[in-house]
Image (cartoon, rainbow, N blue to C red; front, top):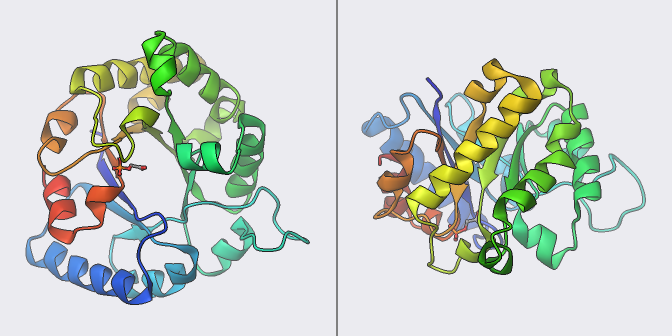
Length: 252
Ligand code: PGA
């Protein structure tokens, strides 16, 4: 059985105090309520707080993720952060391909493919996001778009690398908008993605890969999504900023 995975994507929101306060309280409750049995919880704070977050989580089975990396490991790239650096502070996961990176920072599949290579070089697990825009869904292009996004990035990797991936299906029109895909739409896409893995890498990999849903998930709608056969957890933005909401999602 695939583990359920819950990733809190805090984006550019929390400062040092908010980050550490949240994590300490979360840890307390997770252990009191024994929440993380057969569940994986990953928190994605901003770069300056990854180190302290990792230190607080030492010896627990909660983990952290970076929200981005540069596609080179070192060099004259003012303001950038590399996988090489993250590895040195014990970061084990990174989110790549998020639609906000694609839209506001013009990250295309070719750059994402380079980022994947560098992340794998430094043994980072990759939470790789795919998803269509509202326009693309309105024109029934969602399957074509998601297939193309995977083909040009993740599917460039050999089968032995796929164990390092989580896939997050995040329809762009549902991110931060309060509109979610229906759970039927999400399940259909997740099944489609799993089938793509089946065709490319075979049954064992397609059965094992975790495919998460993201896009306006909250404590009310989460259980309908997580009940679906091919939805293995969530990538949660807004609702991960409130501890009780996030906990309810994890417990859904
Ligand atoms: P949201 O964000 O839950 O606020 O829609 C999800 C994401 O961007 O990963």
